Image (tube, rainbow, N blue to C red):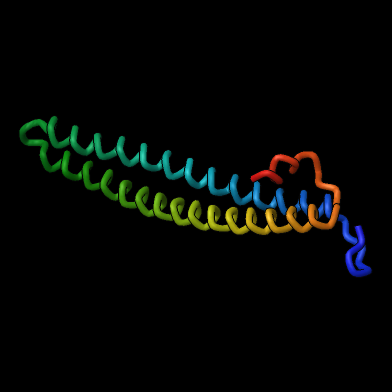
Length: 127
């Protein structure tokens, strides 16, 4: 396809845009999944803390409190990691949305100028 004397390869460019969008989407999914895993780990540790408090034998409360403090420190680290995962997921989702907008505009441009669209992106045209 030639536009104003410039030869373009729209199929490969559109595929590259779709690939960029898909990478950002995958990164967002991975970060979200990591956040869910961390949330489960936090829940497990909070349950352990409650069980330590409930089952502390008389005379061993200090040991139970020390163990609980160690677990609470782990929970704090897990919460920080969960926040990082949440931030990464939000950033990747925003980037995926921007890439999707660029892809839509490029598809519209390609269609308006009679360019060939890769078969894998044919479903994107109606969106």
